[in-house]
Image 1 (spheres, rainbow, N blue to C red):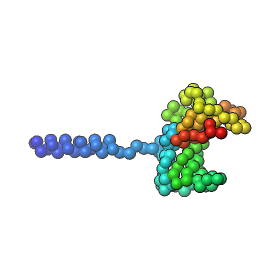
Image 2 (tube, rainbow, N blue to C red):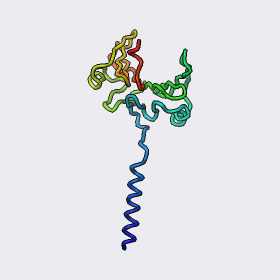
Image 3 (tube, one colour):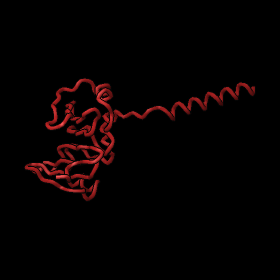
Image 4 (tube, one colour):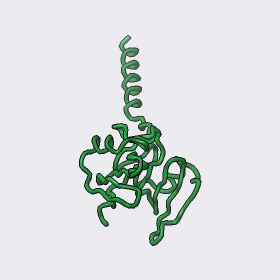
Length: 157
């Protein structure tokens, strides 16, 4: 009987240990500022990007750099050897607080507080919070896209 109990205890520990080490499901359409959008993570290699997203619909070289933008359904990814920015242009992608394309500007500002800077470019105003930014359509007052980087560049000029 002691052998049976010891075996069951060992199997239970192994089963719980396996559950604790399972990788998280990153295909959740969440925008995590400074980290990821769904299963696309900042810092992942191009091989990893292509493995999780497949062939992009369109690629565009980024002028003056060795980088390229890769367009997928609702996402644009900037990368050279590694992903360094991600832009979400589809309402299915949202922050943990619920900010997504189509959210009211006042809601996004209420959630994230005072931005590091605000820049208006024609019909768009950018609210930059360092590792996430929101572009807002000035006519509708709604978020048109959400971008993430380790350190956004909007405030640099």
